[in-house]
Image 1 (cartoon, one colour):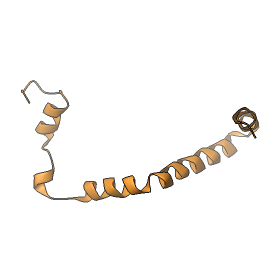
Image 2 (cartoon, helix red, strand yellow):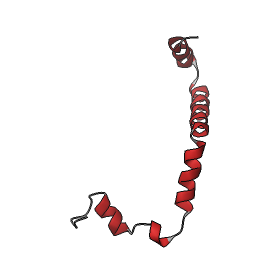
Image 3 (cartoon, rainbow, N blue to C red):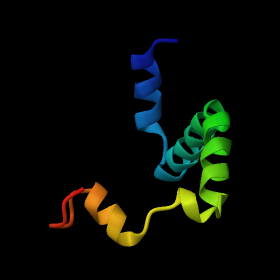
Length: 69
């Protein structure tokens, strides 16, 4: 089945079915990136003070502050 045929079929689906399909596709993407997600979760859970920036440091890094980097 071609992509165009799939698109045509998807257009005919009711909104609720399309929403279920979108949720399924998001799960597929998450599964494909499970290793990255686990690494990101580990970094977020790291409470080591030396690894985190203060709000002021974040603002400087993002260019939202007048203070030099």
